[in-house]
Image (cartoon, rainbow, N blue to C red; front, side):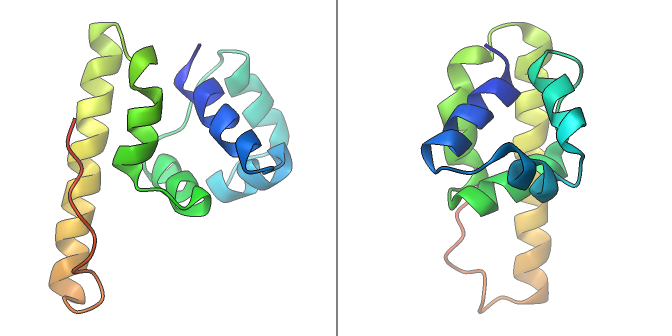
Amino acid sequence: MSIIQKIWQLAERQRVKKVELANVMGISRQTLDNWLDGKGGPNAEQMARVAQRLGVSLSEMMGEVKEVVQDQEWKDKYIALLEQYNECLKRMAEMEPKKNKAVAPATP
């Protein structure tokens, strides 16, 4: 099962329709279907938007998909994604420290 398929399962649990999930990621439903068929996948920004829409942290969402991250290439992408997420959190904290104190950094 791919990461996007696992994300789709998480979305389905919350009764999020494909068109809404695609809109959250800024893609067409057809592109989402292609990703679900193994032709591509989301970038870090899209993953962060999905996590926000599903009401979970990116690290929680990635924890849900951790079992599909088995080969080294995907492990590297997973680590890079978490590093990007943590960098975004740092920048947000610098810009608005009072509003972002409750956001915890992600860990692999």
